[in-house]
Length: 419
Image (cartoon, rainbow, N blue to C red; front, side, top):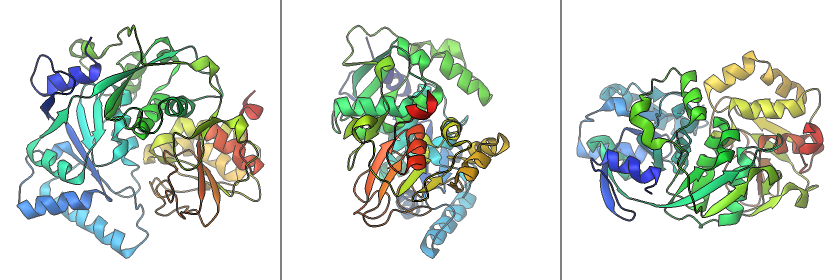
């Protein structure tokens, strides 16, 4: 049985079939760059004095330093704006529009596409049954100028999901459990492919989180099959789908998965410093004092994440010793949360709500950790120095675990608040 990843790469390279380990040159449907990795891409394109053949396939985001916190960042943004105007790039997302990986799944990426981005968490779009992966800045320039890129067909690593996800667990607990089982390099250059009856209990928000963090165990890409969850999600954005041509993306029965996970047994999970794969149940780290809490990022800054946190925070106040920063992942998420009253609940609880940005997640701005501070975050990485000071300690957890911890001033089990 060929993997879904191999089938997509075969289609994109004009072949009936490709083999694992084979190098193919595939057509790329969309390329994404942003204000951190993108300047090198622009340098290469400028040096070649080349014309972009399909500017409609290029997506540019000003999201990492958004709004700009410094003159150098402002000058980078200015250069991007000039580049977009000069080259007819209409898919240009200026400050405030949102984090690239969230905006790209708001009606842009479609099932079966090949999408690359100059950012490691481009694996996110695999939740939509697309092949998506992070690439280097120079590879991005090549893909922009030629519309193609080479790929070594990754070996599949099948993950079967059984059981039903409990109400206190989410996609973050699923991927942390997988990372704990596989380790930080357990899926190096492999395609994580998900199957099993448990899929039906994973919302698109959960799937996006799982696909997003699959790169933390080295995966080249992650991919979910096309099913009713995917189709319903695409309808939200009025994205037309020719389902008859996408049947090859449908779920298949995997007889011998490499890893099986019973969702019904999951506990709230936490990744301890300094690796996303340094995973333990929340019960083993309960009581660890925290200075700050963060809910946001391309991993867990969606509407569903803010809603889950608001259910815990409604009518309560966070600890006086903790600051809670909340960053909606996109303008759409922000507006929806504002209209539905979630932002008011978060503010009433004592949170600081920022505009959409990658700032706090990668330690750029809008909530940087100081020396020896302890942070619990819904983001995707807790490497040394990731969110600010290299002396800080970062724990990763789901939005509900972060919210419960912000209330108690220490890492806390969200089940006490959710029943």
